[in-house]
Length: 279
Ligand code: GTP
Ligand code: NA
Ligand code: MG
Image (spheres, rainbow, N blue to C red):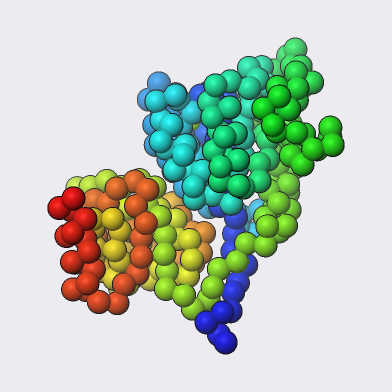
């Protein structure tokens, strides 16, 4: 039965951790980018998805804000993920939002990989960090537990290959698959109105392949997908499972966290979208 046929899909990896522990710098380093430098006050206020390739294998990263005020975005990130990278700054240790992120990971039932960051700083006490993690139910593999703790410096780029290898291995063990012939579904992480292009939804395809021309329903919004772009702004015609994608063509700005479904009947899509708008 070809409907049951599945393919391996890239892991969706959400980066969580306390404010300023280095999540964006880490994702920047992995992407060879520099988002952190442009952030107002150096504080991430949005959730953002990016795809990278390492040794020919794709990985999708979701960066989240660590500031206490953005708990809902961390929860949203934890809900779309296959693996959580918990960033813990080695000079600061386990802090309130670190503990909150551990709870999200446990609730989502997904594996955690710890990135012990800022290991370039002098006077780091690694044992202290391992102890604090253990006290919160994250038992390092070097102490007989099941969580890999990778020493990194996002700033200097050390330990990054090791982290990526560990993530790819974790993904392999999780055996992440997507059906080939199922209609696409996804989730909207952020949405906004673009001056020229109208409503834009930035999200991730979860299953199947999303194509330009597909009829999409996303929260209170619906419409035929007019154009799609990668996280780098490159226009694409289709997006497979685990791909971050920006979508134009919805009639409204959907809500962050809204699920996206491909529909066949435009009257049905309009009706459901309108019902959701009334509520
Ligand atoms: P929020 O998204 O606002 O929670 O912060 P974040 O976790 O994304 O941290 P961010 O990447 O903004 O980095 C915070 C500060 O830590 C910046 O000044 C970075 O330059 C610094 N930093 C990040 N990684 C490292 C590192 O490996 N070593 C050192 N020494 N500093 C780092
Ligand atoms: Na920051
Ligand atoms: Mg950040």
